[in-house]
Length: 60
Image (cartoon, rainbow, N blue to C red):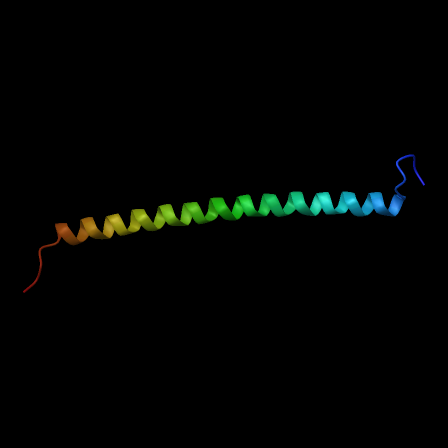
């Protein structure tokens, strides 16, 4: 056992948990950015469709 009273296995387990937590945060950040970009593209598409609809004369 080391000086802090934790076994090597406990230390590896804690390090692995820290790594998993960091990876999860990184994935969440990527997902958040992707959702924001998707929302931005959707808003642009809807604005373009609305502008195109106004520019096109209505058929009767």
